[in-house]
Image (cartoon, rainbow, N blue to C red; front, side):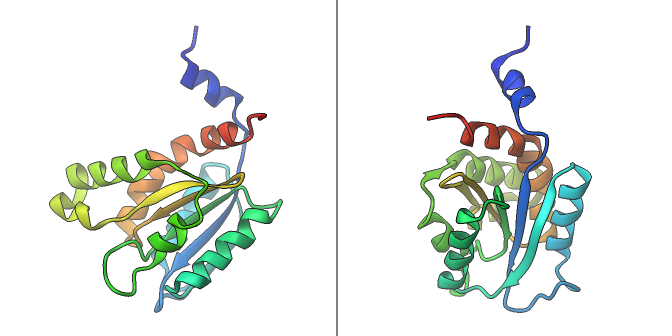
Length: 172
């Protein structure tokens, strides 16, 4: 008999419709290696990419994108990269966390733990990676470096995104 996590994964949807958002004042689609990596990894894992945009690191801009995405029927998950540090221009955390109905604290905690142990050591404390839900839309916000995106996608998001959606879609 399978355990409940495996059963939940078996009951999860086959694919998830995603929006990729890169938060950057300087990157373009040609220079956005992190966004390109997210796109590639989502495609390889069988997820659908509905939209891929780059937006400046402005709180209200990010909030507007998330609010619009949360009411769209064709977007089930929003994956953001960039703007999660502590520099004055880093506002993604504030924008995302101010809109979350339910936070997934484990995402940020485990991301920082993995960053600490596998990659960047004590500099992991500077990351404000965050995830949760806005209505029935899953939101994952990670640092903008290619290494951080690879870590978050391969170790956390790709293995659990379908499971997250199964939980979001549970009847009330």
